[in-house]
Image (cartoon, rainbow, N blue to C red; front, side, top):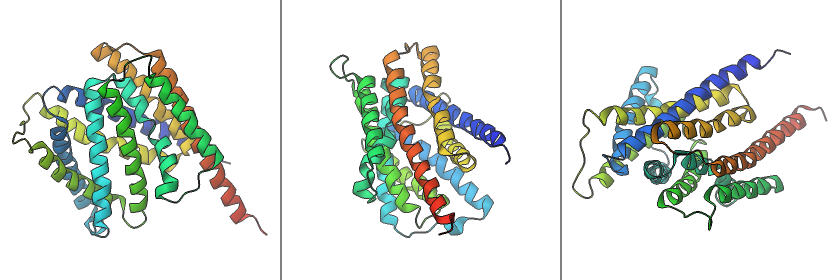
Length: 301
């Protein structure tokens, strides 16, 4: 049997790219928060993303994939993501970056709990255990009663819930829409939402020489991060990819310490490790169930 080490190495390389992209987007969001509100950041990010997606669809000749079927579901999905992303950008502007990333990791926990209601998926004992472990990690990170819950921390936690809703609606969309179609409507609709929200007060801050590079970075980093994760998952099991993704937390903790003098909070790291344990338990159980299904299908009766 051929060794899977080269594939794991390639997946690790893709995940390093994802970690660098997510971290750079957080830093760019922090810098932009001094000049632009979150609606403006989302508006400009969507403009950049729309141009990139349009160029890719043109270069690959895949405009035929962009369809208007279930446009209402696209609108719901993109509004949920728009809300979650705005909350996330607000959080990275005012809260310690490591805490924001730790709470962002709770997204799969919310997916576990919401899927039975919205996707009619079965909530198993292992999934429920994973969710409880995840919530224990949330309590360690936030430490209600021991430390004040700042608006930034609350917004980071809320963003994870909206990202979970986004994941669930994305699952529904992938049943009849290609990735190119989903991403096209994502950037197009969020450009409209961002413009409407940013211009609601009659004022939109125009980028200058200082902010334009960060806006471009936010737009490109978001797309690149998900591209890297998709490629990593395509060549390696989720049980391999998820631990690499968890390296985002210590990475952003070091970045926050160096750039913004944020102390590395051991409670945050401990809580994030507990959250990761819950997520990994769920991923492991899903992989085990998938393997069991394959064996049942391929074994002669």
